[in-house]
Image 1 (cartoon, rainbow, N blue to C red):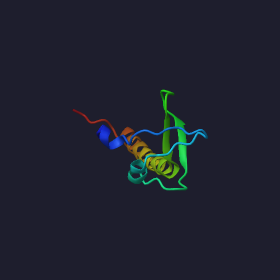
Image 2 (cartoon, helix red, strand yellow):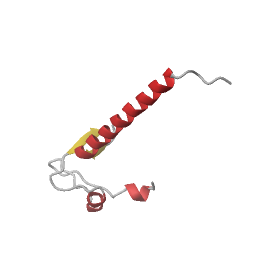
Image 3 (cartoon, rainbow, N blue to C red):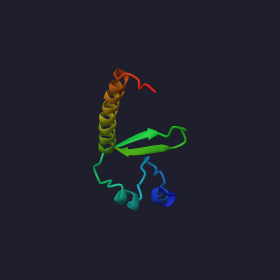
Image 4 (cartoon, rainbow, N blue to C red):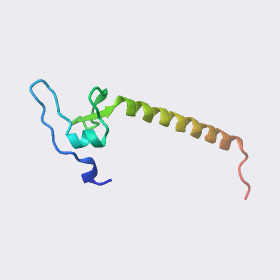
Length: 85
């Protein structure tokens, strides 16, 4: 993914702490009025990350499903005898 695909411009923090998300970002990321967003500190503590709660919830559901599948696969491989050469 190129920088042009993930960079949407700049935003200014208003007096009341509000930030307007650029229209192109809202359109491309399907962010609509009333959507709930998670607001998190960037790992370097120099910025803010925004993520739709519904998207994060779906990500974790998918992640947990994949994790359970991988755990079952690992348990099956541990119970099989090693291949003899």
